[in-house]
Length: 381
Image (cartoon, rainbow, N blue to C red; front, side, top):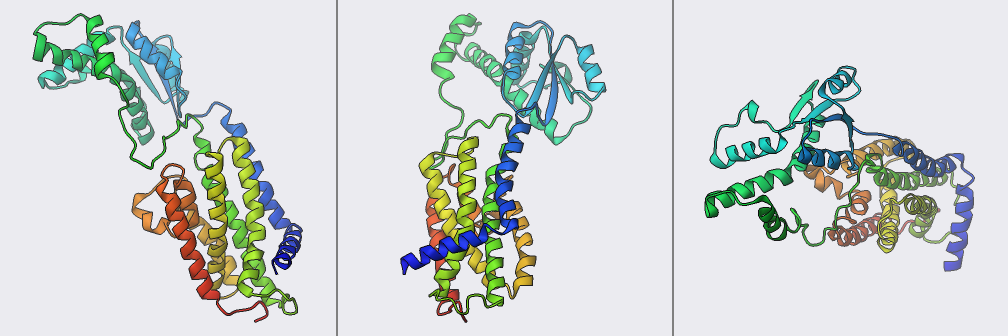
């Protein structure tokens, strides 16, 4: 019987590969990925910021850090504020950050005000910021500026604290810096909870961020398309005289032909383009995804009344998963709805290994639901 199902799998796969629509789906995967890869290699960013150095050594160091950082914010250096203002006026940049010549003095004055609880005024600003408008993206860029200034602000506040609480007079900066670096400024600012992997620095490749999720949806689309072919074959009674055995097993062999073909192409694409996680984990996740996706597609076929309703429901379902699953962003308020769809577990597991256990449970649940809904039926029925 196993050999018969293997022959059936090969025959169905040969038949499926003759369908132009399925070949197009398979070809879309590498074309889309390598197309995005070519685009991402060009200069791209969501915000363009001009940097102006007025002659401070420490300000220059902060600027160099921003200019050399791989980020979705693009930084350009200008000789003076007037040149940067012209670029801002011509829409070549979105904002200007000016690092003043008295950067160190401004940092000290700013932290003195913080330490003493004084009122902060516009004149107390450390960095001069010029923008055409204040929008969400520019607010995000200013968060990166705050991060770049954090080290200098933290050290200055530490010096103020030592002066006020212990010495009563300024401590030489070299002694203070040595103690600060060796005893205070150690370790990371944030610790990840157990079971959560380290987050890789995505840099400026924000175009690749949703690509894993999109490719997984394409795999699932292949299974859903196969469920349409299967429904059409049932309506045409193509399997009436075929000794295919149990209907549930036959349907899943049918669906696996499409899912496995798409999964193999996607896995190869993951590894070739560097989108893959650790090899063993990636293979395990794809195996769970294909098996759960097979039952998921079978359940979708059974809850629709006919071929027309199934064809109408598939694009709606794909759009729903694109929004609900963490393809682009993770919406915590939709977590319960996310757990209905298999891409959620695949996308979440590399950063939270608890989802690997949830994935196994999800696979068991979907198989149980699928078995119960198709129990006792045969292909010829």
